[in-house]
Length: 259
Image (cartoon, rainbow, N blue to C red; front, side, top):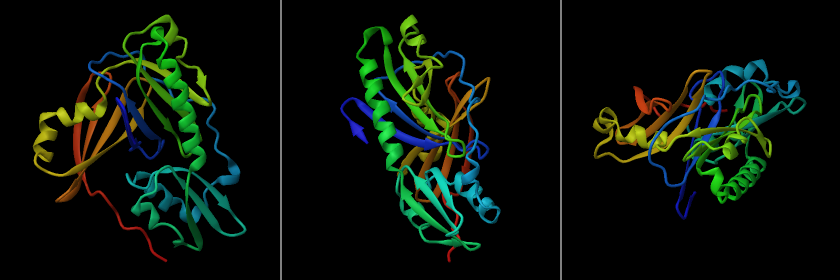
């Protein structure tokens, strides 16, 4: 999605244990400094009714690692032996999953319209707050954990003020807010890195992001999908330090079991 003076680009968390999807909205950004990263703890109990069947747990774990599956949540219908996988973005890759059968369980892929409405509502509220000069909001990122339903939004500001600090740790329409002073998005940091440039220069590529948060650091994996040769360059960006700290390469796609 692209709007006037605003770009949105999306990604998902690389680490399987959390599996958080991450999307960033950028509005005129240029330098970096940070407050303490958020701690993703709290009310994140899984719904026991939607616990994944043991027969397909391993396959679902693998799908969480796939950059183009885009799982946002799921539901389990035991009597029908069906797992409904909701995705925040329909792609040929997750489309291949639809109606596949894994150890007797049918997979149904569903476009997550509810999540899309939640995101639109969040964006509208942040656009409203951005118009308040004291907030100094320049950009924001939002993410969710498919395993737990936990939703968060990172708000990037030009300067820390009493007004925007009041948002830190608060809930905005069901999203937990965290406020940072940061002006260079991870995607830009990665693409500017000399070692990344060596791998992608002159090649056609697409870019997505996944975030990884701990008590002490905020890391973002920037996935750069090269079309020829087909592979993925993964640049891990330390948002606090404002630099690429690791670069890896991996296959961009793994085969999905058929019927």
